[in-house]
Amino acid sequence: MLEILGSPDEQLTKKINCLTFPSLQRIGLSAQLQDCLEKGKNIYDEKIYFTKWKKKTYLRYFITPVFDPQKNVRNAIINVEDITQSKEAQESKERSEEKYRILVENSLQAMVIIQEEGLIFANSRMEELTQYSYEELVQKGPNWIKDFIHPDDFERVNRILIDSFENQKTPERNEMRVFRKDGKTRWIETLGTLVNFQGKDAILLVAMDINDKKEAQSILIESEKTLRNVNAMKDKFFSIIAHDLKNPFNAIIGFSNLLYEAYDNFDEGQRKSFIKNICDASESTFKLLQNLLEWSRTQTGTFEYIPEVIDLSVITNENISVLKSSADNKQIKIESSIPYNSTAFADENMAKAIIRNLISNAIKFTNEGGKVDISVRKEKDMMQVIVADNGTGISKENISRLFRIDDPYKSPGTANEQGTGLGLILCKEFVEKNGGKIWVESEIGKGSNFIFTLPIRKSN
Image (tube, rainbow, N blue to C red; front, side, top):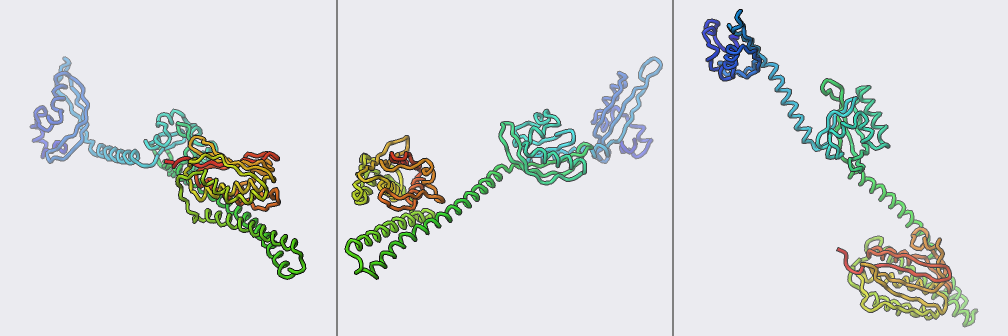
């Protein structure tokens, strides 16, 4: 007591009046002692006391009245205990817990503490990640993980947790899918460590949302798969083109050699026939090379794309003029009902190539004396161009092959015109580059309608 009060000796301490001693008055003990003496009350309290040397001391004290035979308070016993050491230890622990609580609550990652009986802690980031409050997760009981984790991942995750508790093994880094409160699935990655929480073994899990990363990986994998398929298709395509280029050159070289080496052995009709074959093979080869060049430029990005307002009627009439001789040779009538100033927003050169290839195709598969019609119609914000013929038509099986680069549909025309199918592949590339679509409506023996769309105006 001398040490607590800071007095030099016992004699001086005895002279202290506890009811007026300033230090005891400041902490309220004097008033409590007065209350005990007057009312006979037992008093228990804890106070911070500063000694004579300003040392901070935590005191726990009991004030107990002592009664005489007449039940009057004769005196009081004050029992004082210095609890400074335990109080400072408790305050240090509370400061430490508060520091870690602030760190955990303000962490950028979701955190949970799991014991064998279930979830016992989750920070606010976990609530943001799952959209469940901590209370809602706890209410799910021991099976909260089963309700929370995707069925395809549950067995693996549950096995890791059981192994961690039973064998005191730190949980490995893990990726899993979880269900949010709104029913959406999110990918998370967890890092775990074994801890002791409130005297029991527990696992502290830090969870990170990796959904965007997983989606990016999925897109990358799909893109790689698509690229492999495209490359395989192109390899097959080039092998087909190489074969198609050889054939006309064989004809050109063969007939040219015949004329050169045995010109005088043939009559005029035979020589003209050879020259006609050479012309047809040359024309066929030129068209193929022209389309191949244009297609290759689209693949390498060197084909300049300059969209602008174009008049479809003007472009169509120009192409009809270019292809008129081919149509006249088969006595095919080509008509355009596209009104003047039927505009679309597209690259002019690409639009010309599309219409040229479709009209040329229609002529190729139309019988002598047939007809090719070109028309347009507006559909919402797109302009539909229809190139219709009354020719041979295409079967359903072959329609699906028309725009395939790995298996192009090739068939001789009604006058045995040859082709590679590259023109339609080029049309598809150009139409899609301009934001449109292309498709075919056809029936064997009743002709075909090749339809493509182009935007009417510039998209926002």
